Length: 220
Length: 220
DNA sequence: TAGATTGTTAATCGATTAACAATC
DNA sequence: TAGATTGTTAATCGATTAACAATC
Image (cartoon, rainbow over all chains, first blue to last red):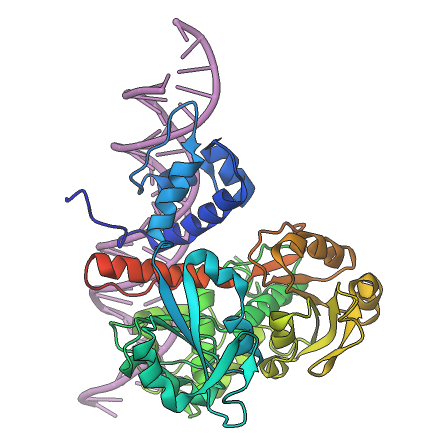
């Protein structure tokens, strides 16, 4: 069993919680934190916190807890925060415009470098900071601008076609905001951000509760 | 062990896959589908599909598979699709505007009935179909319009305050699009749709792959 | 009927929780 | 030192996969 194996084998559930911890640590500036403290704030058992953190290289100190700065540094490494990424948005509708102009990405070294749309009437206009380009330019622009991530914000029918073009143009990852199922080759990372899923999960919880009393919201 | 227990006790992972099946069935119109067919399309083992579907009342037929219409009907029941919901959006920025005017909610009997903002300059203007109301009217409007779900699309600092007001006004669920952690009492359903989480998961996958070759994208 | 596909039971696997020795 | 909190091993729990009898 090798020692330096990277973070590829983190249990899926652990990875999700590591993100919670990372968010918590970013928000709560202090020197040290204990598993009890952080777990309590996030609804995770302290044993679980310690188990999760045991996958990291950094070790806490008995009687003291974990040094926040160290812990956060390693979590940033895991999430590749320092990695500089260029992102292109396809679809300059309301959603595409919102994603393109979202301010929160900068913190994670991710820069929107292009916004595309099919509609000739939109091409050339500005949506916030971004001039809309024609999708016809997509392959060329993606290569030129070294786009790493393509975000799909087009209507469902067009999603697969856009995905194919992005893949051909060599993006590393696709971030799919459309509710349609798309296929990409295994070497391309695919992340679905289907918003109707969230709505259905909420509706499910409401339906379940009206059926009988209590029950906490499922996370997934 | 009672028979009619509702769908409150579905395993979390199963619920997530049921949503995949539901989406698949909505897209692929036909009479029957087998566990092999559907599983194949979704990257789920056929045994897993059958296991998941065994939690439902409707049973498939050996040699034939599952009747799509029946299966979808029960899945719609599980996700409370028929449930009529009123939703209010707080925050009339780009994201709030996009959510408010998103067309995909109608299909799930969910209607946006109000859009709020704090900024007096925005109040009274229209964002798409919606006139922006002042957050000062929120409690009153939420009650009058019988809002069930409140979507939070305000900057991080304001998120908790908005959540508190929504809760006081009696919403059943909160849909949090801000990246901040908010607290709600246990009787209120909370769903986080933090978009930066998706970005970090993508960055993680990219970081892992550049460390050593392959690895599929984690779902969560 | 023969064969394909289901539903379910049993076996395996992985993740969570409990327990406790190590240690600051 | 005594006591709190870690890291890790063991026990439990739950979810996935395998196997197979039931059945259309």
